Image (cartoon, rainbow, N blue to C red; front, side, top):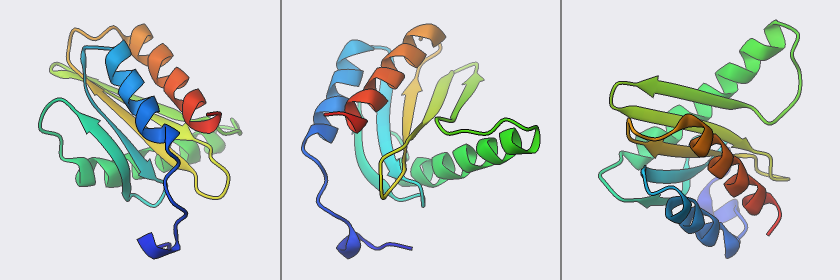
Length: 131
């Protein structure tokens, strides 16, 4: 497990990518970028979001979804998880960065259109990978 002293500095474009995501989708409550080991890297929120708990859950849920896909013979990266409830949506996307894979969590209200969320979050992942 890496600790913060072993990480490279955070690329400057990461903050801009999260800012653009929230600007593009006003119905988003927040966006959290986490390391694959569950530690928060960066967050942008418009409301109270338990960022450290969400970071830990996000990495576990993406890992579990990837394991489930492998069990049914579907291999490959770029995994995502969408959780929908009465009060909103949570989208988790793998961010396949070299050296330290990450997870993007996007949190939105019940009026958020799923297609808009998917498109904007995938565009954010692209911006994180290719500045």
